[in-house]
Length: 267
Image (tube, rainbow, N blue to C red; front, side, top):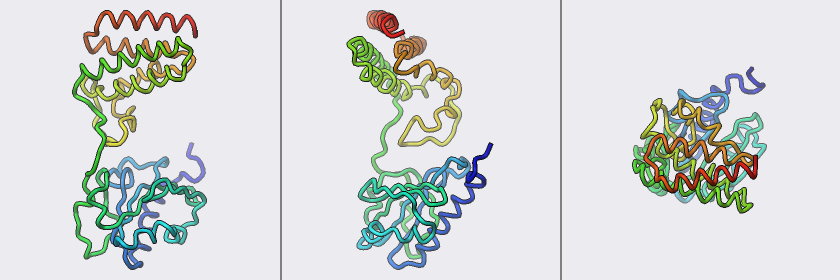
């Protein structure tokens, strides 16, 4: 069932970008508006749960003017929530329910900005830098091709996490197992599982993961059993690792023993 306000939201998102671009085009010292993510080059995946992600590029000396006063957004639609989360930009909620994350950059800064591929909504004719839409900057490495290293890291995460849990540090144990160990596993899933080719988020391997690896994702509920049943999570992860790689028998045995002790204490 479509909730109120979601109907045709996709169209409203693109229209909002067009409106912002139009307003910027009428101002002096503005150079371009670039959209990212599902409103950027990945438009086919936009839906009622999408938001706006964009960069505004201006002449260097006018950057702060557009950061300090958001009149150029308020004029399009009032802002009901404003959070300046970086020195360059904000997270905002428009009165009509559209959520946006954006940054304002000076022209000279664009060579150093870390970003995925972008899509130009508007730009001045004289601003011809094609590089602004390219993926660049310090993009984190979310995947690994070194299965041995990653699997052994995951095993030691499980081992330490179970020890922490038995010590009574259950929150720390949860982090070691359902965060650290799981993230290691996710980083090598592409080496062992069939994947459906979709747009990948270069900043977060968990984004659209269920669509990317539908078969492996069926294992996630057991790997994420939660605070009260963390031993079940560790067991599911150990079982998976054992199915894809020859584990050290002694460490495997120790982990299985710890899982049993944790289950006896918690379950």
